[in-house]
Length: 89
Image (cartoon, rainbow, N blue to C red; front, side, top):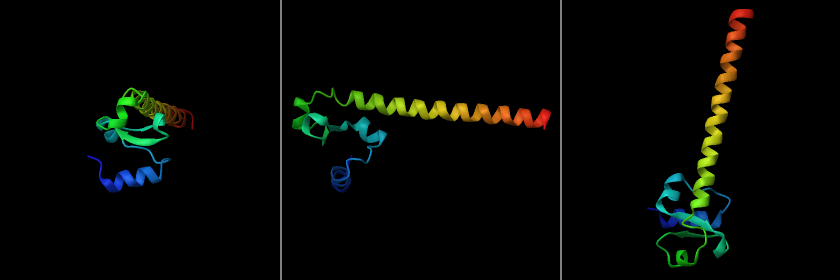
């Protein structure tokens, strides 16, 4: 459950990201409501075209996939460098 302090902080700092747990709880910044932070149980949600923040959730998942892919590539290149040094260096 989001605290009132966290809600106020996010409303004042909209460049701040929600956590995955907050997304899963149903929170999102709704651009139909000029960036208002709403929950799926809020009255405003009935007029929201964000589809419960699904596009935001997918964006978050894509970001996590990108980070995981980047880590995999980094580890693979590190391994190749290690092999090169081990056998040729």
